[in-house]
Length: 125
Image (tube, rainbow, N blue to C red; front, side, top):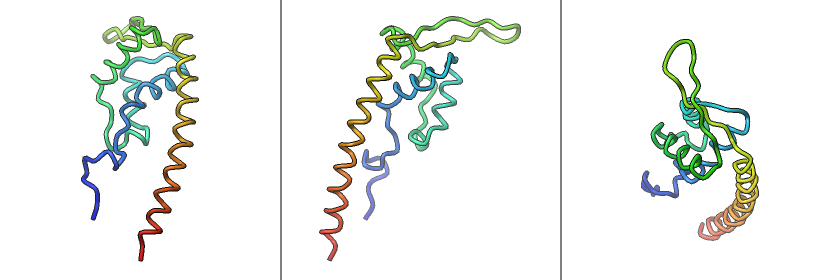
């Protein structure tokens, strides 16, 4: 018997990790929203449920309001102006906190995985 395809246990989407993924990308340098969305779409954790561009822009707007990123308009010789996002110093601090938090989660998940594997072994005849 397999789990329902929309069950959280399938791990198909980790939406709460959108923000740290955006910040990690911006830590490499400024980028416009489309570049960020394209990068996220290539990440394995979002493979089965790619973040939609409006959702990415919504997160960027919230992060801008919180002072984690700044936004400025970039005009080029051709095409429309693009909004370019940059990670701020408070954003870098937040990114460090995410690193610490995810390390704690990873350790807790490893502990849970060990329990699940033991339960699976014990349940077999």
